[in-house]
Amino acid sequence: MGMKRLVLFFVLVTLWPCYAVSQDDSIGIIRRTIREFDHLDERYIEPQHYVFSAMLQGSYSIDRYSLSSSGLIDQSITFMPDAKVKVGPYAGWKWVFLGYCFELGKLNFDDGRREFDFSMYSSQVGVDLFYRRTGSDYKLRDANLGEGVDASKLNNQPFDGLKVGITGFNVYYIFNHGRFSYPAAFSQSTIQKISCGSWLAGVGYTRHSLELDYQSLQSLINEKMGSQAVSLDSGLMFNSVRYYDVSLSGGYAYNWVFAKNWLLASSLQMALGYKRCYGETVGVDQRGFSFNNFNIDGIARFALVYNNMNWYAGASAIFHTYNYRKSRFQTNNTFGSLNVYVGVNFGLKKKYRQKKLE
Image (tube, rainbow, N blue to C red):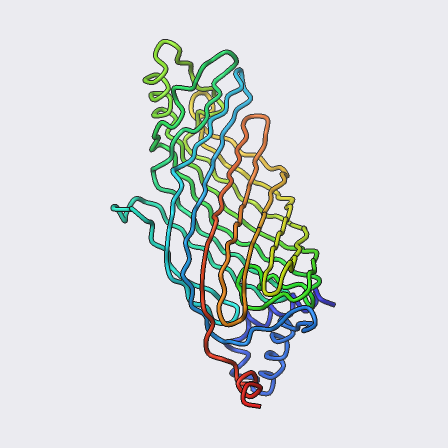
């Protein structure tokens, strides 16, 4: 029955503009359907008493991209930019939190890096949207260029020939939504009163793009390694690769209430993703390549929260990992952030104002 309500919810949201105008008598049905998505067992979960929230958040971002080939020589290279620390204000209304963070110590505000993340949590359904475009500030963190080759001179060398983009969404359903609260852990809009867990299931879509200036990479190898320099394997000699990923995910989340108003949460989802890839190579195979296959991806979330309903503070960490494996080459992209925040709720809802007066 829950999955039927999930489908009905998205149909109603899509048709809302025209449906609300032509079917005035049905507005009540739509509202009741949406309210069902926040139905709670108040023995386990304290509903949000306020309409609005304001928050200050600091974020520490992580972005790791690894490339490896399995040709005549097994090679692998890992790129990571320096970690970014950002601080900024956020504002919340019911399910939605929006804000903007400024990178500390950043003098150039147009380095090509673009990031946008949007999350919506109800008791039954969660939605994540993300848009990321890296700048040109990657560094080589680890290189394996073949057996017996010492590539340590390449460690931490700046490399501006890699650009990565990812756009996508995840939608997931929370089965034990009456007693388990995802919002209590990741949007601070409810309070978990009794420890509880829930199974999760979802769908997702992502589009990845990767541009590699392999000639600049080869030049860097030659410069830093001198007479010990080796040639890149043909599996790493490509101009660009595009990946399209459709996935089905499942997992489990648990909220542990270890003291009054305190919550420690963890969540892990594994996704079976169908990947379709297109690439442009060099050398003999000028026309490029393509492949389709299945791989396992993952999403992990952790949170520590103190929330007394009036104000809250805590920390959360969210990590995504995407894998692409084929005999020619493999990639792994892991990105995420560690967030530390403090905030206040305001705009007491009418029914709680009435209770306060009684």
